[in-house]
Length: 490
Image 1: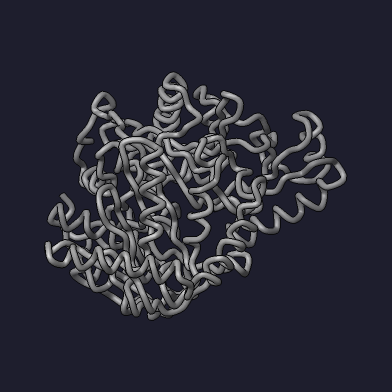
Image 2: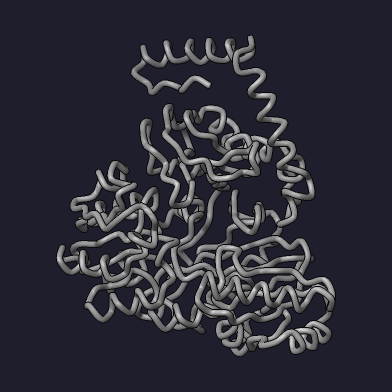
């Protein structure tokens, strides 16, 4: 078993990994920027080291500095979390060169899956279902027009090294191609240092379904079933759930086998996620995210598998604790990403000091967070405040529990997107499970959120709020007498 792990990340994911380490008796090392000196993950770690100023390029993306800290502190493993250097093969190679275990997949698998072109070629050869398109980089707009003509407009231009929704553009006709290709190639070069772009058939308004896989170094690979991630804004996920309402039992098993086949094709081990587009009963492999995902807790909630623990065990050379036959998902789980965003300003990031913070609690509720009252959310990183993870026996009860938890959640001092989640939970298409990736614009969800926020503001000092606060206070009096945790006032 690893003895001491450096977590090359911050916020709630750093804290999540440290807790898994603590349960396994592994020492923890935090690296932090000037902006995170007072963060919870820094307080929690056994050892902590400042690695530079607030901007990520000068701290959390400083490979040499992080390796230096790992060597000086005696770390025998580095966990990259997600984001930052989680899928950076050059960083994983640095770990290997310095005899430090990179807690993730092998470098060869990272390189393969880091190239959408190379991974697509490998998947096609292995028999994995992929989106129709080409498997070579498009060098000029004339070639792009020929390819698009062949597979039929509309098409998608995609950066081979892209991720996070960056470097993707739809092209509807030949007139748009030259300008669109130049734009995507430039964006890809600026964002990823690689301007390779390929073309796929555009599949309009699909559902986004991903499969969690995990493998050990002995070649054992299993899947932990699917997560639906179709509620997105600008290709960024906002709400995830499992199981998906779209899949039949037969499709669920078939797609799981395809996910395992994809991982086997890449000689993969540790945790990863195979992403699929799904429409009209057909599915297409998109890519594999060679890391732990933000939404991994809902898989943990339904399968009972601690993914961070398994990552640490696999990195230590131990076999998986489960076989495929051991995995029997139970109930329904939903995750809402609670972000510091301004709903009245196109959901722009809204960093600042949290002046009030109270998390919901009760059966089936898990909060993954790295903040507290008085914490200053820095402007340099993702604006996530917390992840609200809900489990219940079925979907209807899970949605009801989400609504109750959102009502209890208190965040003051910064604008946040809880009103967005409240609007979605009351939406008829969401409740029926008949949504896809066009859900937010199609049903004008953001406009509804703006109206919801305005209504909340107008009622903030009205009789309804006063009555609600009085009711909660009355319950708290009763709970106090029974030594039960109190409910936060709205």
